[in-house]
Each structure stands twice: as structure tokens, then as C-alpha cells.
Length: 141
Image 1 (cartoon, rainbow, N blue to C red):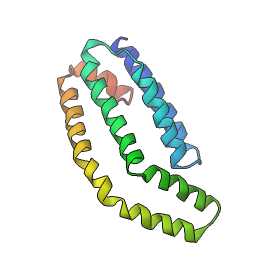
Image 2 (cartoon, rainbow, N blue to C red; image 1 turned 120 degrees about the horizontal axis):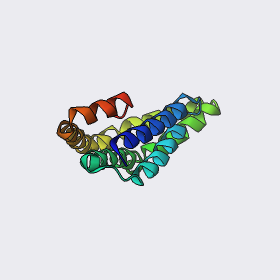
Image 3 (tube, rainbow, N blue to C red; image 1 turned 90 degrees about the vertical axis):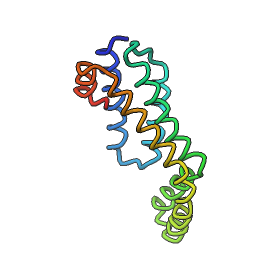
């Protein structure tokens, strides 16, 4: 891929994710779209200049998905969406309490996510200003 092809592909994935977020189907629909996007992005072969940036972005997405899955938060969110759809207020409130209890467990991922965000920033700084502009124009930053 060239930088321009990478930016174009990135923009297309971003548009798809945005569309899935605009559908009134809830969090899990967006989560499923994010997993699909991660799979697609993982198949890309970015140019040498974008290798580090690409790798860090992939690791960041994977870490976010892992945090939601490993803590059980994703399952609770799915159950909450079902309870809300069924208008089961008691179940929804119970699930909200369970989600609040996960706060400490989710916090252990904060350090990992912060480190990855720092890595993304460093990778961005290493890019040429021209490449950063191409990515910015495609909403890939």
C-alpha cells in the first residue's frame, strides 16, 4: 500500500464504523463492527513509514476489545441492551449495579491503554508532516 491507499482504506473503515454507530442498534452492533474492522485492518500491508503506527493502532484496538471481553463487561452490556429492549427495569438496574462493580477490574486496563496511547503519539511524531496531513485529511488519526 501507498500512504494514500492506506489513508483511503482507513477512511472507508472509519465511515463503516460511523455508520454502524449511527444505526439505532446499540453498543453491541458497534462492537461487532469494531471487531470486523480490526480483522480487516489486520490484513493491510502498510508502507514502511506507517508500519509502527499501524502496529500500535492494531494493538490499541485489540486491547480495548480484550478489556471488554476479559472483564465480562461486553456480556453485561449485551444483557443490559436485551433488558432495556424488553423493558425489564429490574433486570436493567441489576445489570447496571454489576457493571459498576467492574469498575476496578476495568481500571487495571487503564495503564495498558495509556501506554498504548503514548506509543500511538510517538509513532505519529515519527511520521513526516506530509504523511500526518494525508492521514488527518482522511480522518485516520
